[in-house]
Amino acid sequence: MKHIISPLDLTAEELDDLLALAQKIIDNPEQYSKICDGMKLATLFYEPSTRTRLSFEAAMMNLGGKVLGFSSADSSSAAKGESIADTIRVISSYADICAMRHPKEGAPLVASQYSLIPVINAGDGGHNHPTQTFTDLLTIKSLKGRLDNIVIGYCGDLKFGRTVHSLVNALARYNNVTMYFISPEELKVPNYIREEVLKANNIEYKEVRTIEEVMDKLDILYMTRVQRERFFNEEDYIRLKDTYILDSKKMKLAKPDMLVLHPLPRVNEIAAEVDNDPRAVYFKQAKYGVYVRMALILKLLELA
Image (cartoon, rainbow, N blue to C red; front, side):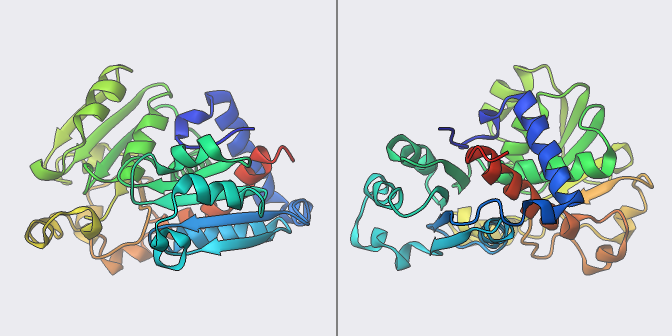
């Protein structure tokens, strides 16, 4: 039995297989529409989510399965003090596979140690978000045709942004990937990412302060929001939340085939006017998330 806690839980070959299966599902969804008939996905979401939770649910239903679970800690026995270990032991009797989101880093890993069913980390604190990473990789590969030989810029909250941390880890395994990190001093990428991922894998990277100074170099711009829920005080959040706003003026500096990705939700870091630019693919990216989660469910249940 396999769990997915980090994007690195899949080898490069397994990841290629996952993305290939997702593409097959995109090309022929009807072929997979009943493959999970009689099976159940448990969604254990201890913090709010729209896209991740609903895309997991849509993925399982698209495969012919059913969904059960909760959408906040307040509506679960966690509010009574039940441990994650006890919760997952019980859920293992009710479902065939589980997706868990939790505000504490490492919570899905703890769940996997007690679970009798595959556990998928749907986001743990500021740590990892592997299925968003698989979504990002599928989006890039489908629209760019490659994962090697790219220049990517990450912009915004690089300190707390688990989607950024996960994607940096995943792309570090590909050839000739150059990374730019665009953030204020307070939201710089953590030291462990810099030392254990970038330097350890000899990734060419540079930390900068403005979008404008690197925009013309990028194949991908990965925008993120400044996350209010990760800050310890409101003053710091208010001071930093509008540091970067992508608008049509900045888009004029970019290559004609540059792509803008965003894990969503967006607040105001991308102006609405950018939505009409064909290089803005973040809503398409959200759709790819359903397909890659369908593929992952099938792989973990050993149905494909």
